[in-house]
Amino acid sequence: MSGKRESRKRLHGSVDSRTGGEQQQIMPEINKRYVCEKIDPDKVERQTAVILHMEYRSQAPPLLIDDEDGNEKETKEEQELMYYVHYEKLDRRNDEWIPLERVLVNEPVEPEMVNAIIIPDEIKKEGGPQTPHTPSGALTRSQRRNLEEYSHLKSAVNGLDATTARLEKEHEERTKIKNIPRITIGAHTINSWYYSPFPPFCENHEIFMCEYCLLYTPHKSKFKTHLTTCKVRQPPGIEIYRKSNLSVYEVDGSGQKLYCQCLCLLSKLFMDHKTLYFDVDDFMFYVLCETDSSGAHIVGYFSREVESANNLACIMVFPPFQKNGYGKLLIQLSYDLSKREGYIGTPEKPLSDLGKVSYRSYWWWILMKLFHIHQGHTVTATFLAQQSGIHVDDIVSTLQTMRMVRQYKEPEFVPGEWYVRIHRKVVEHCVLNEYGKPPGLLLDNSKVRWGPQMTRWEYNRKHQKPASTNRRASKSQAGTPMATPPIDGLKGDEASAETLTTVPESFEFFKADSSAT
Ligand SMILES: [Zn+2]
Image (cartoon, rainbow, N blue to C red):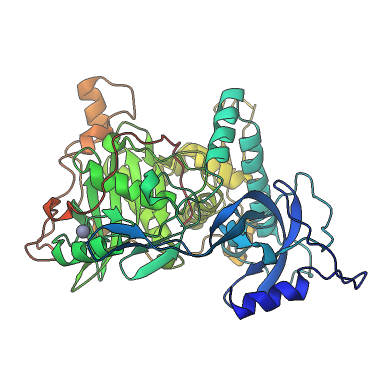
């Protein structure tokens, strides 16, 4: 044990400050709340946490190495009793294993808050700009709006039917402990946020994943060998968008099953309550990459189900690349594609808390552009949907937060239709609060090389299918290839990847959801 840890243990381990006397160490218990030390790079904070699990394990994950005979073996790290804690006021992504000396058993714990709503920092930060002149302590209007939305989200989860609620509970129980401590991909080593169903032999090990073919292994030496032999330098699909150093590749889940399953495993590390479909056959994946002379480096993606009215199933920007505007760029692209297919799209629900914030901000931006054109008029939500490509339900739910929509019983109005009165004052208020603030990164529609052979309407007419079930129409003919591939002569080739572990046949099945961007 290091001297630093020893001294910390002495500091608050067994001496009770109230009595000043030496006492026997009280051992923490599962499901009980304690004040715990949360250590961030620059500070140590005291947070109330619940102990979810305890076991003997090493503080650092063991490494898999080759011995002199070339056989794999695990490094033997010193083991000690460790506690898996959930910090009450923080998102599950902060859950972690901590040693005994960071559980301050003698510190009094603040009373438990029942049904408390925790507003994630991201919602406070990204959900809307803060009005500068708000008296301290009071919520700004946009914060209130976001809080309302977040509460609705919570109650939506609480209001699940019994079976879904039970499955949700089971899922939560099974996935409450992170199984993969961290992952190295490309130039980044990232601590994982949540459980992901990697195969058992990966559990509790750092995973090494090839950023190009996405094959993974817990064996560092095998990974190094792979890097020297892997010829892949871009996602296995058609490049449908390129502007400066950003490219998007369309990858067909049915044709590139392995790649897409690995992508799902990777993204699950950073998504909570997600239902990732390991049955990836019915999904198309749009993989965003930063490109340079060495290749196309994956930074995020969105998927969409082929036979679905949703234009987006799941969205993810990996942690090192967040806050670059990539999430909203992907959202813009998802709408661009559905518009090209001739239908009005909507993301799969329920949206995650952070996904909702990104979408709200995108919808406000598009709607505000229309409001400037139609200021002073009353228009229908259907009209706005046709003009914007945003689904009526999403428009109504966005505008309801500002009480801008209503239905009328009078005979001159269409029953069931939502009407939007675009008052100058409301528009001014929205502008003042930067509701329609454009995304940091704008999609250049002229650079999207993608077009279905026939529109959704034509397809439905031809196949006499009910509306919005023709996503297959977009497959296989998706995209006119770009004039020159970004990396010469290198195509998806899995031959070199034999040394790495691939996804086993059967995977746990998760429900899909959109996520933080
Ligand atoms: Zn590779």
